Length: 204
Image 1: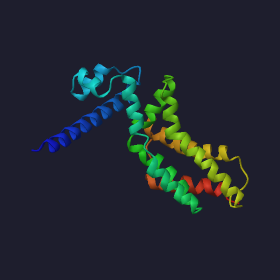
Image 2: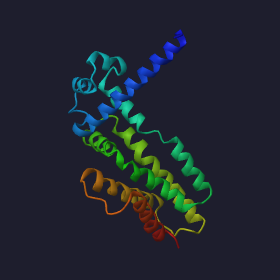
Image 3: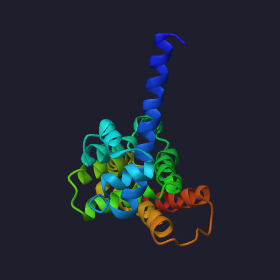
Image 4: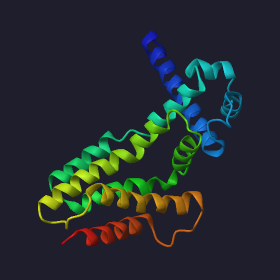
């Protein structure tokens, strides 16, 4: 094997190890919170030494920040939402936002991480909130205001309307991810239902 091939292999192994640590830490933080999880516990669960953990993440804060960054990559989704908004495709704009939030129900750790970080007053909670919630309702508020000017939506407070829609979706996640209430319909049906109810209330 050439030196360059070995280098690529080592880099790939390092990325895989890093991803494994992030996955383990994410699960533990979601169960116990930032303050209730130790680096020793993370290392033991990941099957590595604490020294190796610190090689990849010098502090627990750095690890938590990496988790948030890994779970907050929304550029592709936002590009699709903006494209639908440019076409004035109301159903698609709301469906993309609701679909992303609800279909991420397969990752219940996400909402738990957000709640723990906020309740613990963690310094990174604002970044988490900004990247996971605020980005959606601020964009949606602007879109609702635009469609009101177009004469399609009735006059409402754009920010309150946007927060109301996001609130519907977050409550859905709370019911099923946190409280464990069984879903009575598929995620696709839930998304379509929420979008239909909300848009019917907005349209003139």
